[in-house]
Length: 275
Ligand code: PTJ
View 1 (spheres, rainbow, N blue to C red):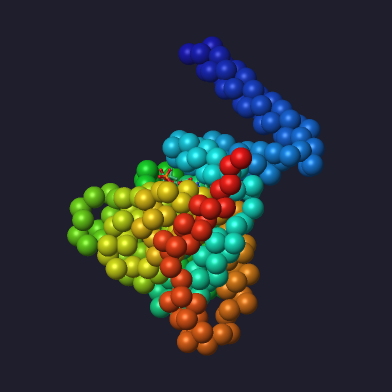
View 2 (cartoon, rainbow, N blue to C red):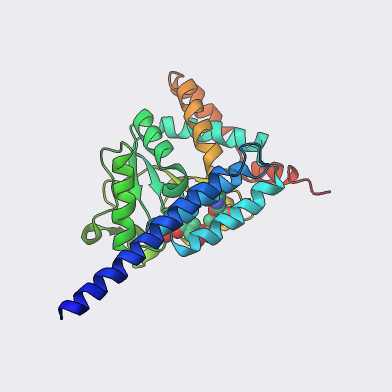
């Protein structure tokens, strides 16, 4: 029995040492990539995505979703296009006009932009809700911890027993918390799955999405689709909110009513100029 205990202890030590060596090598390999490497930013994001998966934050499908996003980002030269800037400005106006704005966080958003979400929630006085397509208790807890560590004071969507079903649709796709998405008038849902976006739109909410794919169901259905990488879009959104914060309601309303999402998506598609 005593021998068995020692053997198990030694195996555990070996496993822990291998993990430490692996993390060390990973850091060294990353430091070796020069900052002027043409794919530096993209590699940095990939590293965050992999780490988030290893830390139980990202869904496995989240890695595939990231790859799809990368493809579209590559096609637009990894820069924020003019149509995306217009969508960002309109989103800022809509969020400032909202009575109960909610910022929805999934695994990919938590992996790439949790600090920006917390900052946005503070300047808008908006709620943060964890809203997962592949919902598991442990991912919810890990994302909640990450947001709290980065300054969030309250995170909704964590109480499994009290989740509501939007429009009484008895499906995991329709869950929302009572104080948050369920009663929100405007929801920012970055990288949202098409089924969930459709349920939100059909329930009469104004939906702002961030999605690099202009052809996705989410982009087509949303009230405002920001076709940009979340890591560029959120800081720009924050700047727009700060610059529009003291404008009167009529001006903000005119920005929103002059915006046409379909037209903007078409203009965005024109910026994908493959030669
Ligand atoms: O964390 P969960 O469980 O809620 O799951 C999250 C994913 C993203 C896996 C889930 O919502 C999903 O399957 O989404 P889709 O249908 O793959 O849609 C994600 C969209 O986000 C795709 O159209 C991608 O092109 C886009 N996308 C991926 N990375 C980025 C992005 N858009 C903006 N910025 C990115 N970094």
